[in-house]
Image (cartoon, rainbow, N blue to C red; front, side):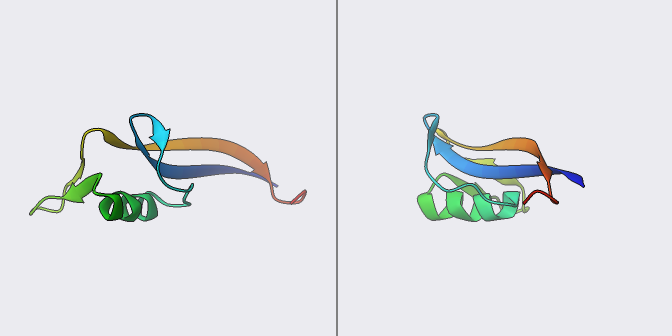
Length: 65
């Protein structure tokens, strides 16, 4: 069975600063730990320049894994 897979990670100046994570929330926790992102008082997420959360996606064959 083919499944779409998405991964997220923190970058700084375009260079990886954390491992690939399964969820955006995990990547956001990494960004907070690195001082590259935060939530405001209303709960909205902000990347701190030059930090950024990027994502990659692909298709995975679960039967072959």
